Amino acid sequence: MTRVFQFIFGLAFAICLGMHPAIAVERPFDLTGTGTLQVMTDDNGQLTSGDLNASGTATHLGKWTQIGNLVFTFDQSKPDIIFASGDTTFTAANGDTLEAEIKNSELDTTTGISTGQFVFIGGTGRFQQAQGSADFTVTQDLNSGTFDVVAQGQIDY
Image 1 (cartoon, rainbow, N blue to C red):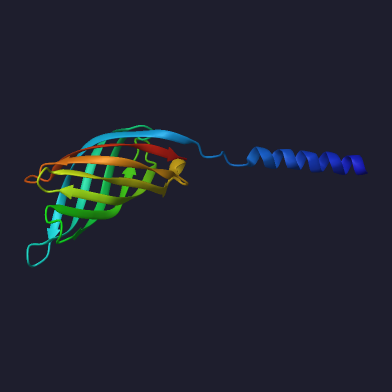
Image 2: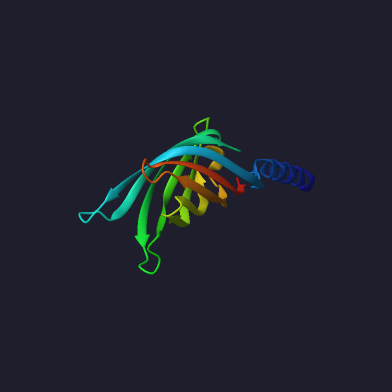
């Protein structure tokens, strides 16, 4: 009886090992794209927030689209800099989504160049447990609201 129990236990253990989810692997992440930013202002004409829409190509996403929301803050000691934070969703070619927070973003209004970071916080499909980050640079036409974006970093999923 003991050998039968050992066999069944061993078989069950082997099956459980086979069902263990794959371990996330750190992979390089590269993204390029273009988009538009529609800004909102308060009654005094001060920028308050913005909605972004973009598309492009990226490793692990293929062709992607993006929607996101930004909140702007200002520092009187840096009048030419606009700070932004927010959240965004990238949708991959196959429909999987990659969620990210936008952090440490600074737009220099004299150059139209913004830098910051996408911090990946999950998603759907293969990105459900995604983690990692990518540093981005945005070159924006401050008159039209159009922009080009490039990002490089690492993603685990």
